[in-house]
Image (cartoon, rainbow, N blue to C red; front, top):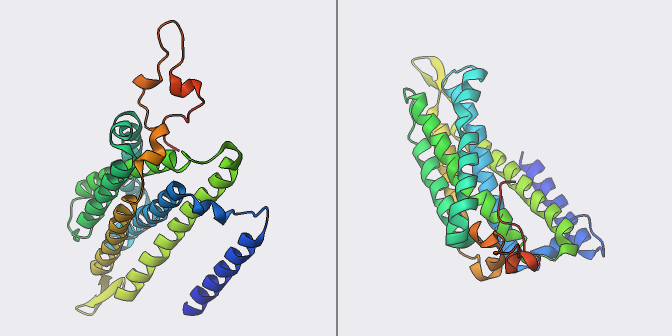
Length: 267
């Protein structure tokens, strides 16, 4: 495993060197020179790692730790999707225009930290409804991260560079997801997913507790990174619905007439 990690690190370093030397690279790493874009991507890699990794650990907890069927496991994870939809609407319609990306994302990451932290306290007899409630809360908190981060990330990107920026943004998000799954799997294996009790192999829930704590730690770091975002850089995107309604007589609001970016919405 260590050899694989080392090989992957070397290949990633080679990729960075090659892409930085190309005039028209497949992945334009120079885009990270943009302060706002860099900060939002820093948040996204940590948010994706903690969120997607947690979904993976939760499914293992349900099926391997609690012995639930795949159907029950899926239904018990599903509230997260509803939470993301609700949280995205809350962010785009209410919180983002008022708080701005810096506070909105930081609060969202703190919510993710707290929710995953509570998951580390689950036991063999913990009610599934409590876990479902936590999954819903996790989705709501993530809605405060994904939508504002995406809206703010492209606020200072020129139309000509939007395609390249979008590619890099999605690559980093997917990279974060893979990193999260890898880290949390390593934590579970290191602790041991099973233990011997009275001569019988039984699930070791401590392994899942450790994985959840690691995920909460990554989310906490993401909250700190969110504080590096400057709201002034994303001011053009902090426009509520009222500010985008046409003026009396059919005139468009100044920001819309100037070709300002659309209001934040779920990806």
